[in-house]
Image: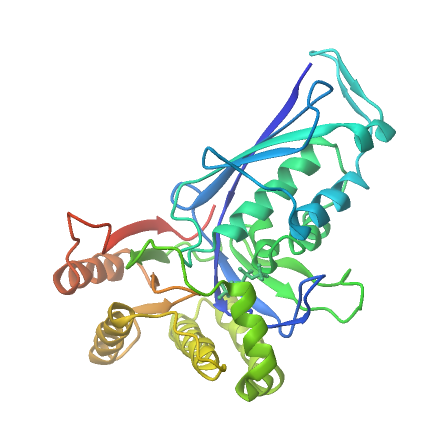
Length: 349
Ligand code: DP6
């Protein structure tokens, strides 16, 4: 017999960024962060997990290619879920798995991203969130979403925020064992449904500095990060929560853009400096900033993760269509390369 579960999880984009760990093994951050979960139709991971007594080892395929499961992060997530596995009884298929049998059963996992892997589009976020969710269902683990988020966190920090739709906060927590470092939903997907997200894929190349090694170097060398984590982010988190609650786009946009720019400033303050944005990213910032200023009230917020692709959040559909016109004018898609393609989606699931 084979028991299979398939899950789909969207990626999320941070509007107040996570950058820097206080504990690398457990993936505990130096500050809280807030994100928006995207529409799964546009940027998501689909993962199928299967278990069978005929499997003789754990194996995984990512986008059709087999990958190694030796990494500590995958093993941490698997260990955590396995330790919470319960009895499974599927009468229809005649499958019965007792709690204690999970220790000796092997898994096959197939995962697909519908967007470029590791190009700064938070692929690890959707990937680990989906894996943990699917494994929990397969093994009948009874954890709630927040408890699952603390497990997904051990795969990749930002993954903990993809267990929920809408607006999500990753609370950094205080405990040394990380049990209180988890995600909570601030507002669901219906709360602010005027927003439209447009992503400009400036490059789908794999980034040169991974988030993990980049933030390690920042923690080791940047004084600006210490100031950011202690003095700036805690206040910004409060202001961002307020802006989301009140659907105050002017504050939301100001905080989102400022926080993205400070994150990239912190990267620049790292030794050796890390450059995630490129010339096109900088030009996109100028276009949006000029337009927002000429309108008097912000129409669009921009944010960039660990890569050059721009994530823009328009205040409504009208602003989104005007933004797209501007982007197509200034950054026309190149038919020969994958440069300047656009992904348009609603903000959430
Ligand atoms: C810039 O979650 O990819 O996207 O925890 O080491 O796996 P690890 O890092 P990761 O870092 C994401 C950084 C970011 C900001 C954010 O998503 O908050």
